[in-house]
Image (cartoon, rainbow, N blue to C red; front, side, top):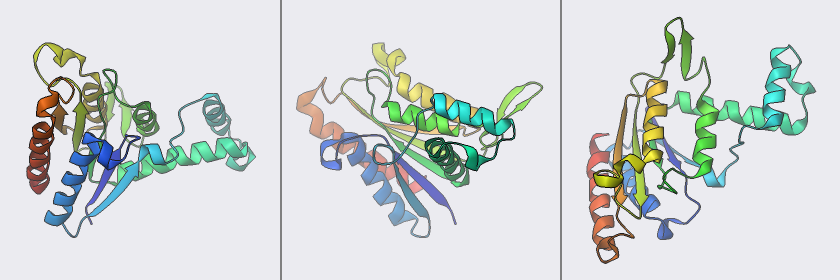
Amino acid sequence: MTTVLYITAHPLSVAESATLQTGGAFVEAYRSANPSHAVTHVDLFGSFVPPLDTEIFQGWGRLQKGEPFDRLEASAQAKIARLAELVDQFVAADKYVFAAPLWNLSYPPVLKAYLDAIFVAGKTFRYTSEGPIGILMGKKAIHIQASGGVYSSGPAADLNLGHRHLYTSLQFFGVETLEPIFVEGLAQFPNEAASIKQTARERAVKVAASF
């Protein structure tokens, strides 16, 4: 069965978030077009995504030295087990839909924590004598991103660091396709906000049919 991860990184409700509204429209259209596919929602703000910290690195170090997992502190066990769960879920999926807004030229920090969880040698990439190579070939992704200004083109395009980092990370894993659906200019053109959202929704529905 084809599996899709719908990965959201937004603390607000669907009613309050243009990113999530567009993402919801995409998922609804995708499910309608592919009723036999499994779509799993990974709500990064609503789930445990441990940021890499001292306890995790020390725990990994002790494991590498051969210490049994059950000898680690309970909190370290929980963090390390959750990181393994996240990367295994990501590797097992066939497609990815990221719904994350542009925040301060990047994206919400919890998405960076999530990406850190899946940057795992032997799982999403491997080292070779010629450098690292991705091992998730054949998969594809969508990035739905709302923003107050216009960052997909024009003078602010170089500031779209959130989409750029996500694109580069997925390429590193071997996921060569990351198609963007931008919902942009909502604050820059407030009188056109409703139209901007509707246009993005229509594009999301169209893209979902062939994703």
